[in-house]
Length: 465
Image (cartoon, rainbow, N blue to C red):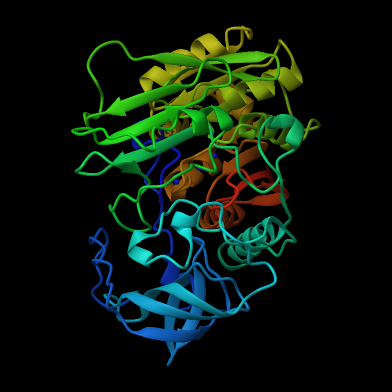
């Protein structure tokens, strides 16, 4: 699962094995990594006096940034669309093989260019004062989805060894009441930042500069009405706006303490006829229709002919039990399934949320360690039940990674249903699984983050006998 990069999955709520390194944007665009580069190096300050280049925009890279070339060098260009000719100011020259730049003038516009939903994000504004958070907001909705499909298709080909036609589907309006067709009005959780003078707004792209805004167009209407955009909050660090589907919207002011003392507030989310308890500050899908969309997609992805309700079925990175419940709702009261999640609070909620199934349980464990213990300690009978199992996994944006993939493959479950919010991480793991004797049989992709580059995919891989 979306998951903002802003992280839709807080680190304390999603942990598994250490993933293999994901290729960076430059490598994906064909630029070699600079010699001697260090991982984790702080980004260079954004330049406001860089040269202005005239560029022909070629394509979109993973991460939502457009790709152009200047004198043989890759240039990543913000606020551009493939096929356009733009003038762009170079903002980052720290890398030997590529630069970053921001569009300041569109010389030849794409037919898919549109006005942004708020003036504070317009290319008419200086890049360092341009509101971030909706990097595809200048692109027509159908073209956004086509570009996301292109990125996913390319990733599967390059890193997964799979040639597959991909279509990114819009969320069914019936599953997302209030969300608008132009990709606004969908976000149920919004974080605003607070400047030193108390002013409130989003950050500018790739910076910690707070940009005052007059609206929050991606937010659901309840949060748009609640957002204190004209107020000041001296001493605060951030403002969180939360609109659960099963409770009243809330405004939460943070002074920067990571985990406030006292009792943790909880709320509820409703998916179909089922209610889920979740920490107010815990992980939940941010699109109003995302949980229902993924529930239906996971149910559809499972091959019923391979599913055994009595097998040792698993829900890995299970959170509060959303996808385990999806399996239980499709296959009935006799389903056995174990939900594994590293966050103890989430596991506690999952246990309560899955109480309808006698055969369901929720364990607090890191996924890699849980699988290692299974591999080491499972009896012959347990191994047989694991070979008949369906495993649903919904890892963080970095993906499951080699260690988890290797351990899963050693247990040899009949089918895997992989929910992914990062195309390259999914493609890398598909490639690893294919080398371990699994094949990609089914894939659906969904636009759960309109006006951003993020895309969600649900894939089924089956063991080749």
